[in-house]
Each structure stands twice: as structure tokens, then as C-alpha cells.
Length: 200
Image 1 (cartoon, rainbow, N blue to C red):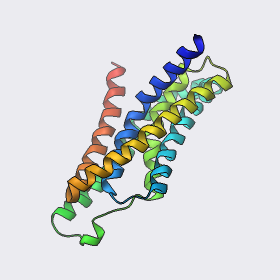
Image 2: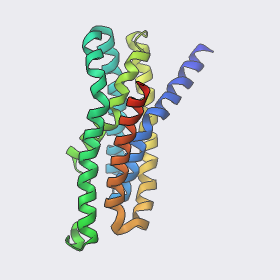
Image 3: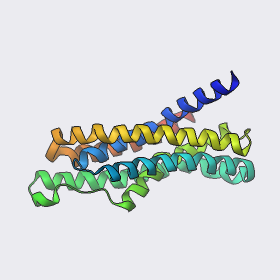
Image 4: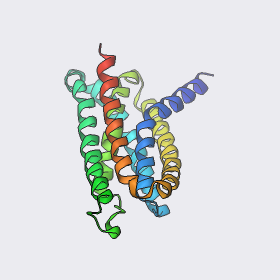
């Protein structure tokens, strides 16, 4: 019974943590409507990998470097906000240029690069560092199992989100980059405000 509760709570935790990555994956999908299957899997794997890694970094930080992690924790939401603001702002500018006709039609579809994906992965998973506090009482194996479940849930949700995003992208067409940028900035604000309000 304890094992079942442990798995269910880990899956629910995974759903909660994956929502930002899910939203960003939707944006990636409708920004690149002709994305290949291999790239979809790579994007979902990237987000899932970061969501697996971050709780373990948090667990290690709490277990071995508690005072250092405590000092760094207030900065985490600001980092996520800054990264998403940068990516989202860039997309908004690209979207405005497309709508004003200042970009060639061939340049309208911007493919997601490895560097941008890496930044997205960090930005959407950095708050998962805090999960290290909640699993700090676990041993290494149990903490790793929770992290792997979170990563698997994230992978599945992001893979579904990409399919949804691609379908939306075909509807939004020229507005995809602008809408996507606004959504990314909104996600960054949500991460920042939810953390700031939690401290009040």
C-alpha cells in the first residue's frame, strides 16, 4: 500500500512540475508545424531529462550543501523568469516583423535550435530544484525513483503537447511566433509571481 501511495504521489508531483514544460512544448509545436518525429522525441526527452535531473540536484544540495542551497533558492524563480522573458521577447519581435511584412515568407517558420531548447529545459525545470527539500529524507534510490517518475510524466506530457501545438500552429499560421512569445513570457511571470506570493 505504501508503494502504491508513493508512486501515485510521485506521478501527481510529476504532473504539477510538468505544466510549464507542457505549455512551452505546445508553443514549440505550433511554431514549427512540420516538425519531424525524431525532433519531437528529442524535445520531450530534453524536458523529461531536466525534470529528472533537477530534483536530484536539489536532493544532493539539501543533503550535502544545505546552507548554500538555502541562499540560492530565492534567485531560482528570477532565473526562470529571465530566461523565458528573453526567449519569449525574441519570439514576439520575430512575430511582429512577420506581421509587418519585414520578414521573408521563407523565414517565417523558425525551427527550434539546440541552444534554445537547452535554455527552455533549464527555465521550465529549475523550480524542480525545490523538490529536493521534499525528498531530502529519502535515500538515494528512492529519491532517484521519484525523479525518474517525474521525468517520465514530463516526457509523455510534452510529447502530447507537441502534437497539440502543431495542430494549433496550422490554425494560427502567421500569428504563431507572436502568440508563442507572449505565452512564454506569461509562463515566466507565473513562475516568478507564484514563488513571490508563496513567500508572503
